[in-house]
Length: 256
Ligand SMILES: Nc1ncnc2c1ncn2[C@@H]1O[C@H](COP(=O)(O)OP(=O)(O)OP(=O)(O)O)[C@@H](O)[C@H]1O
Ligand SMILES: [Mg+2]
Image 1 (spheres, helix red, strand yellow):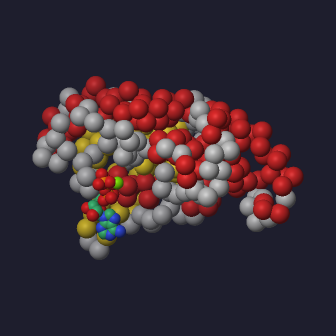
Image 2 (tube, helix red, strand yellow):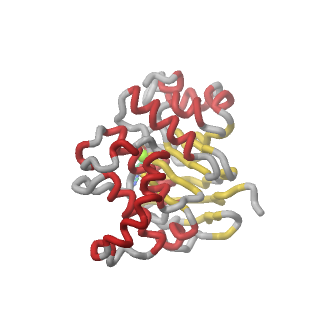
């Protein structure tokens, strides 16, 4: 079996002639936390949208565990265990924290169309939901209304609902965006914890987070791969430093 759980080959996405993703060859090693970084507009989110089938590539291919998934639907790849968090896993604010995780648990079991009719089935899911909440440190908030959760805790809940779908590969787009120090630390530790036994590909602007948990980093600039390696390697790369100049200056030193 391939060491790479995810690969892209010559991936290209053009928007009316504008090349947002330009010949990207990505190789994500199974079990890694792999970070995708780069200045604003580098093509990171577009890459994620290609990987999760929100967008169709102009050319190139995407392989999951050696299988070409380029033409598969987003529902199909979700069944393969490729799950994106933070942009699609909306949590329902009017429901309790526990109820939100139960909904995530119902997706793989196919109960979603009648879940509201059968409290019995739901209660069977409670144990698993509580386990997941404990995993993300939210057990004490289980019966709290989700709307009342602090921001960082909502993100932890999103991780729990994503875990409920049993991802083999989790894609996180800016998981610590808009957070204060404490929440950033909490969510960073959480990502590290839930990475056990799975692979994580994350877009992240906060270089402290990248430096502390990423096994490997791919730097994108103007749609293309500029550098790749460990944090030590890419943070010293003159081309990387230049790409960050004038856009997000100082970020490589971990300004946030
Ligand atoms: N649907 C679209 N139509 C046209 N251009 C687009 C579209 N989506 C993205 N782009 C352009 O593609 C480029 C890459 O955008 P993308 O959102 O992927 O960057 P990013 O690396 O995620 O940036 P950020 O760090 O700001 O989130 C940008 O110049 C953007 O304007
Ligand atoms: Mg983006």
